[in-house]
Amino acid sequence: MDDRTLPASPLAIEARDNFLAHYKNGTLALYEGDLRIFFDWCAAAGIDPLQVRRSTLERFVHDEINVRGNTARSACRRFQTVRSFYRLAAADEIIDRDPTWMVRLPKWEVNRDEIDWLDRYEMGRLLQAAEATSPAQHLLVGLMGILGLRVSEACSIRLENLTEHEMGYTVFTVLRKGGRWREIPFPVPMLRMVNAARGDRTTGPLVTTKRGNAQTRNGAHVWMKRLVQIAGLPATVHCHTLRHSAITEMVNSGASMQEVQEFADHRDIRSTEWYYHRKASLDQHGGHTLARNFMSAASLRLAA
Image (cartoon, rainbow, N blue to C red; front, side, top):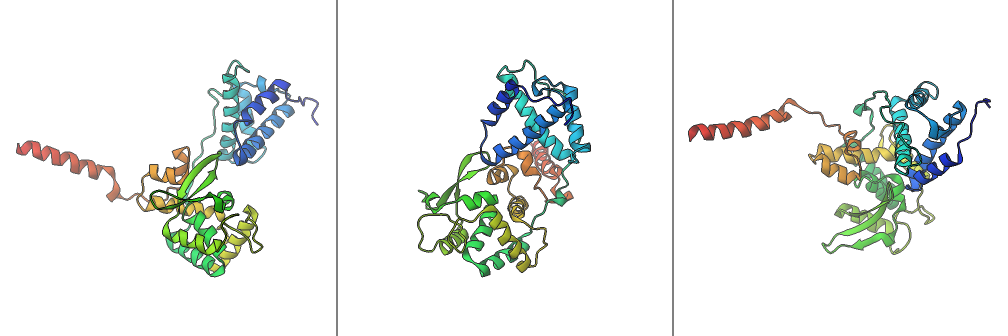
């Protein structure tokens, strides 16, 4: 190890723990990993995390790309965790300034054509393959491809989470990313899948294996790999592709971005925009709508 290696100070560790205490589950694991990498980088550079300057953080981002081999997008995402850490430390008066202010970050763009997703006909083939395989696999595909759940969310649902809503819907509650509980209705076709998969059971996991155990994230990926092969779809299709497909189909069906954001449970609408695959045409240009509205008003005034 380099002689310049400097362990983080007790105060820096306290600040890190205070920051991580605000998060749970997958978000906590992600942020723990981000800060572990950042703290290790600071130690190797001989700098205490609470003593960094703006130029130090720009070097960290540079090394994330040029030494660790991350993309600019990944480096910027990790830096956002670091930025949140310092903002909380400044708010808690552990540091007297936020060193992330005015940090220059590399530019990056999302190539939406590279986001894997299935069109409605490909999704139909996958649903057919799943229905012919087992009720549980049919339901899992529906939860991810129709309701847009993440695989871990779909596997976590229990029959005890199902209730009857006063409007007549069968709904379920699910713990979503970021530790937020959400109530979601089952459309009628999905309710048929639920009834087929649950049988006479009234308690326990909704999606089960042949042995009756709750399906896991890894087990779901094994199911998906087999179903993709049966349906004749590209081998690159995975569980999260179904969520991409659900969100994209919502957009392509004409739903507003706000409606899609609510459906996808995205905190930031920019996350929703990454799934926007619909090609805008000249016929859809907003000028047509404004010209129709304003020129109609002008015609009325002239006639008066």
